[in-house]
Amino acid sequence: MKLTLVTPRATEKAYRLITVQNTYIFDVPLDANKQEIKDAVEAQFDKTKVASVTTLVQSGKSIRFNRGKRRYPGTTTRQDTKKAYVTLSEGKIKVFDTDEKKEEKK
Image (cartoon, rainbow, N blue to C red; front, side):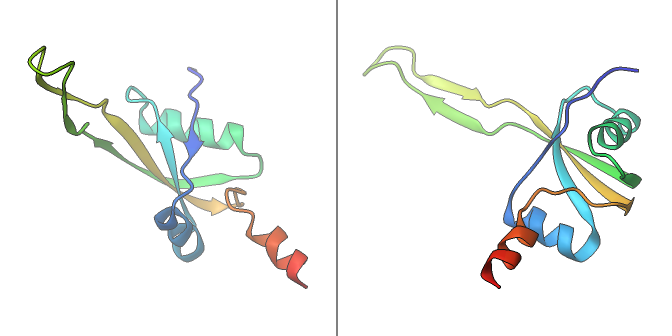
């Protein structure tokens, strides 16, 4: 079994998916498959049970670069990234500190 490192994304869309559908978004390596992602999430975050994994690869944007007025003008592309949408059937992952903020306000 290959060890795969998954890191959660802390964005507004990710927060909405957590609260509505219990789906978490992770950044994963490009060569990771769905089974490896499932095993990594269950290993890294205790007391979680993964129901489904959906992946997508975002191709890197084309960017222009320049090293002076007339020297080496051209374009290149940023690196491709892979995201995984993981739906949990049991358990929660603490990505956003919403519970602590509510307790402090009281």
